[in-house]
Length: 359
Image 1 (tube, helix red, strand yellow):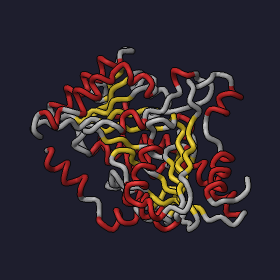
Image 2 (image 1 turned 90 degrees about the vertical axis):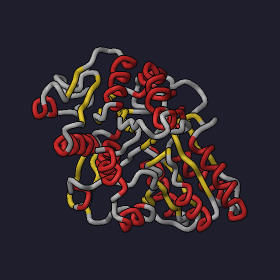
Image 3 (image 1 turned 180 degrees about the vertical axis):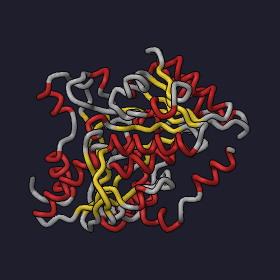
């Protein structure tokens, strides 16, 4: 079974892999919210593989805290859509154990801040078992849920864990932005033989995006570890993931009006990181701005900077600019919260600095 799954994941057409390292699909067929994209991906994978099951707080009777699992309990029953107590360490451990025995659990955290209660199972039980067993044990499990800042939910519900989990060998860490990203990456994550941390964004659930005809096919999935160029440009490269991709695209529109052509890279995958796509873009544009809502110290942007310095330093015409969240726990007050999270204007100013334009 696991060999079949590995074949399914690796069988994404070579042309599709190349497209995703270069540009997004253009054949938009319909609009779909991120919420519906995630729901449809879960539904299709549960229908295709009886070993896939869901578990988490309120995923069943309540149909999910954010309605991602709407209708799945009624369709698949309580043996495959399991409501759990408020005990992340307990149900994450059960999920890992089920994965050891060949099932494919999808574990939902109501917010990834609560995954701290289960981090021993995610890191020590899930991420390390394949290595420690010399490849004899696969752990095909997905940990998914909203990550990062939402709106007015305070410091304990607003942290971004991309860099945390991205630093751990044995995990794959995915960060979708659009509906097509969410649908294609979640399907790939469920089919993958290794543990995947799937970081969504609460504020994106209700947003609608064009979805290509290709993405509506039940066999559609995206290659893990490949970034996507959302907008091509020649003057500077902007890297971003999750909600910050939208900010980067808006900043690129502002910059275009001032004669600056920005290339926007949607990272999609934090681990593995598509270093080749990032460096290829920097070698073309000669400038780099990294954007993330997480803390700057030891962050994803820092890792990208290190990669560019190591592989493309001689191509840089200006210092790298890093845009990140403020180095404080997230404030509760709305005005302070906005100041703690990167805004479009912050990206525009950084881009102008790296292009030696007045701000």
